[in-house]
Amino acid sequence: MNPRPSGTHLLYGYDFETRTATCRACSVSELDLLPEEAGLWHAGHQKSCKGAPGQGPEAVVLSFRTKPQTIR
Image (tube, rainbow, N blue to C red; front, side, top):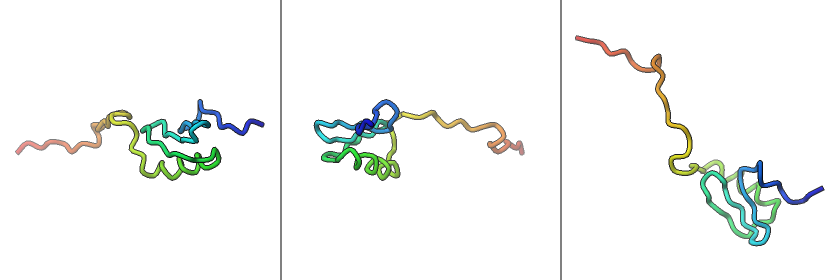
């Protein structure tokens, strides 16, 4: 069994040499964490993670959600 977390599917990266966990969405890092602490840190970080600036799709207002324009 491999004690190292697989970095390809995780939402955070972990560097074993520096013991640093980094959120893949916003690049915020936390230093001096054990591998088992990295997941807990990221779970707590998710509550305040804003993601990368401009990351995510823009909101689209669907036509049935807009107020109809009335002519007076």
